[in-house]
Image (cartoon, rainbow, N blue to C red; front, side, top):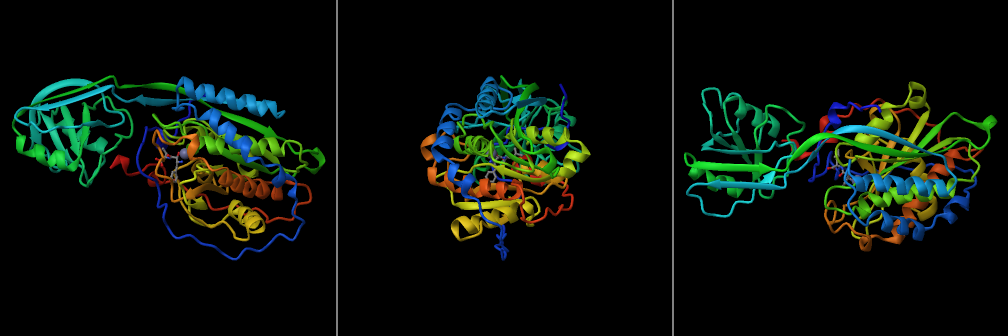
Length: 460
Ligand code: BES
Ligand code: ZN
């Protein structure tokens, strides 16, 4: 089994926030229509009830990357693809995972108010007692003449990453670390990756941290238990539709993708059983339609812990396959009743073949072209990073249930599923059918994924 090594993607159950600038300007440029006849064959077959039923089956429980539930979901997806007549490829990969602590206790002598510490992803376990010491921002400069030997460092969020703060304090002898927020609200952070030099680290709110400063000098006890880091296995599930007629093979490949894992505690009906079930439906509908382009239906594992499955998939592509892949349609959160309108997001905010095809199809179907803007945070990022035209299909603004236990089947809209399924189905078919006269693929510039495109506020 190949181990995917993607340094940017080596993380973390991030539970907060959105990467990139999701609310950036949305452009609706002039759309020039493909004058070729518009085949209703695909559109008419898309059945929102079938998508809905598969969401319901997938979203009975959370599907956390590397767990048995995720594996069961992969087997369900494989069976569905097979029932439509596909050969299915299971692509396993390993990644370094983290299971959060089962208990965290923090007590400070003389401090009687309630404290509700939360963990940082990649915090180590430990039961430590020592003097509580105000360590400011815990930068190297600030700690230069500070000795934290045997102490528990109380640190403010800001300037450098959480991981660096913990390492700087540990280097000065701290046995434990408390980092408090610098703005209102809970701090759901990650140390970014595992490090043998970490000491137990927990988070507090701004109010808790500032109140605790008055107790600096008192004895404190910090106990973190049950955290576990180590190798986990996940898998991508891929069904391939070869061009119908070898002689008419354009050599082009289109990837329709989605992720089937969820965050812990969330059944992930919309994020992203919706995209997975839509990928299945598009596979069903397109199965016997004559096409001159290869179509891959790829459902990825381990998206929620750093886009690991899609990075792995892209890492297995040959240079030839990369240059033959003309489009990646990424379906992630495509059916919430409580979210806004459909939008496409590209990593650099620029239009590409995917947005062009979908603007054509949406204009024909609905009279208005689906707008696009800039955004990362999902499985189109690894495709864009190697220069493949890619876009995320999502409703914006997101529903309030995003990444919560309330992301359940009752929040799913069949109308939205039907709409997105038709737009994407027609867009793909427009390009993949014989004698297409649709837009020619333009290879975008290679967009190197920056750390900010992949991770969010959670590291700093
Ligand atoms: N479906 C989300 C991405 C998303 C949500 C994009 C809302 C735009 C608006 C995806 O599953 C997710 O949660 N991604 C992670 C990033 C990843 C690198 C771990 C995120 O945004 O925290
Ligand atoms: Zn998602």
